[in-house]
Length: 385
Ligand code: NZQ
Ligand code: ZN
Image (tube, helix red, strand yellow):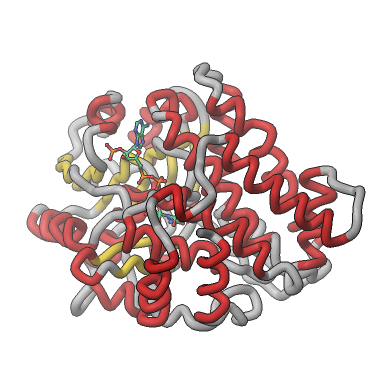
């Protein structure tokens, strides 16, 4: 097991009818800015519920944070924060709204041009406005982690920053908030959470038995509940499991003491920035191809994954690994998520542009062994066609 330093200060308030609890969690004298996305927060009534719970505090609203939140729109929110002397932020939404809120929290207290936050991957962040979240879409884990992904539309740069100053103070996880989600977003949530676990689990063995068992438990749970999540019924128990599994998939727990990959995500971010494919959908394309191309380097964990997650014990090593990669692809397809670039009209002629973007973002030696060079990323993209 590798050395680690695990810190996570986010309070999770989980369950039905928990939004009202923000009244005890937001300071009584706070000047609050509620940040949300398009219309879902208003349409579903969650925005009104949050406003009611905040009582007679000074409350302002900033709507319009897009999926894959942009620097350009978020800087408008920073202006609102400064104008109204806001000292607490409340995100109501999915990963995009929560990530956007993290950026606003850090940017509003930043000396200098806030894009430096992204260029330094968060190193430059010295403080942030405190914030809480009401999660409406289980997928990213942003509700209990220190990362955020922000896009500068002007340059099509989708970059990650991370800072311990942007852990949410609290997150409200009410699974019944997921009942209004379209099937496509539910499927995306399963795929994103699944891939988060894989990025932290499917590397090489370091004798971290408990982390492996946690990760396999999360993967098995996703495989088990995936079809039920999409079956159409508003089953609270299923949604509760989805919500908690997605949070645990990326809150630091399973990453502690193990190598991490993240190359699928880095390649996926470029596909979103250039071709506007939803985040999870890029992962469903890249992950199976990535595993197939890096078969040798990941051999031991692939065999473990085959046996423990999919119950594959028959056949040669190569056959078991192939079967596990196929099972992964079939699982995504079963959820209605395509696993090939061609489903989005992307062909070999588009690969150069993705590689150029990876290069300009410094993604030239990624993966758990930093051996995913641009050449290897190209092979992965070719295998995704
Ligand atoms: O904009 P509104 O109208 O609110 O609609 C949203 C949006 O269109 C809708 N939605 C959310 N909750 C709903 C709902 N519709 C009905 N009922 C509800 N309860 O869903 C759409 C997608 O929302 P979005 O927040 O974009 O989705 P997601 O949670 O998948 O977030 C994706 C973003 O998170 C980043 C991704 O790159 C992407 O930008 N990620 C963040 C991570 C992190 N911070 O740790 C890690 C992830 O790997 C990921 O990269
Ligand atoms: Zn993700």
